[in-house]
Image (cartoon, rainbow, N blue to C red; front, side, top):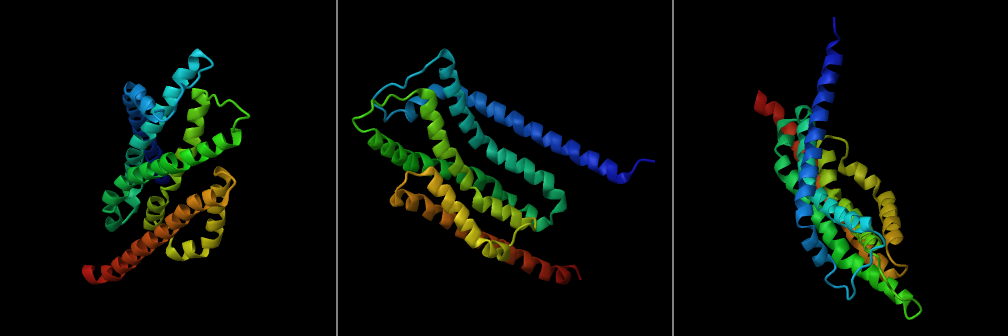
Length: 246
């Protein structure tokens, strides 16, 4: 006779594969759609540059377009990936946790786009200006398209992911992995890690560091507040459950 636990594991793995395939299909469709308008997106992104970007080979143009379309596709696919993840873990969650998907899923894209905007409109021009000042009159600044957009992505996409912190904390609190007490105990270590990240990706001046560190610290505090609210609601629901079922 087959082991019921083995059958249950096979069923979970099959469901996980299905949801991963759906997420991958959504990403490919979004990337194909973004690629249709990639030239318009490219022109908007380079609107502030006085000179045309240089390409060193025929494949560079395609590589740049794929990078741009890929970032757009990630932003579009994130809520779909969040939904698929939520549906996968939903059977193990109480009913009250399932209803929070209406808040959790849209916030994924909103926070990612907010992080991208912070990186693109604040951090990227600040770092680029600093680099131009370092070059001064000693160097002729000639940007290749591949290096320019790779640099732009390094300055924006990580912040899109870092700005997901409140949504991730809410999700992990909902499923019982995190709680406000653990977050409070980890505050000093988390601040240290966030400060290291900020100092690493910003120019070596105190003003740039502060501009990046302060939003990251605020994100952590916002995440703690969200965790407190979620955790308090869970405790209230658990205390009321015996009364409502009696």
